Length: 240
Image 1 (cartoon, one colour):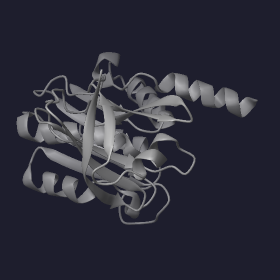
Image 2 (cartoon, helix red, strand yellow; image 1 turned 120 degrees about the vertical axis):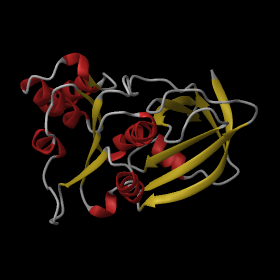
Image 3 (cartoon, helix red, strand yellow; image 1 turned 90 degrees about the horizontal axis):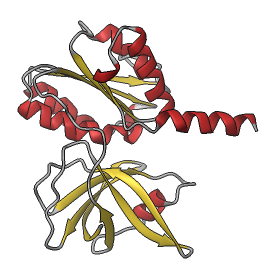
């Protein structure tokens, strides 16, 4: 099922990421923080459907989506052309990323716009969680960091929230390289911690394998679940 929404606001988060506030007419979106909706539109006579995570809290007539524009993308380019007052059709909010246990310690690991479900889950955990939450964010440069000020404020106002940023293409005072390489060292313990991972498929697969090698049980690692197939497909394309 789809719902017609109206673009109420457009905000530039980074040079290539825009945040869209979509408001539905006579519909309340109920979901778990971290789950995603789908944007539906037609291009060249064919329907295009793409998933984007809602970063706002549930129970309202609004969805807030942060979308990075890719020059060779279809949906991201189309969305970045939307302006205030335009209509956008969206689907139900669903998906596999949401906090399973607010009494367990949690670690969120994200790259790129994979940060969007983590933003929603971290906000919910800061309010409802009884353990500790550690957010690991991987980006190319400081300019690319999405919601950095929001996360910094959240950590400063909640003793149970920590944030670690890792940059791959910029020298700075913080960690550099791949974000997954810092997870084990930064955490005091991996025991009884639930891990939520989202972002570039290679990072998701690498992080999952790293955690398993460290003895983390499969049942404590949560992803959307499609990343393995994506990595395989990219490898096959490279070989051909």
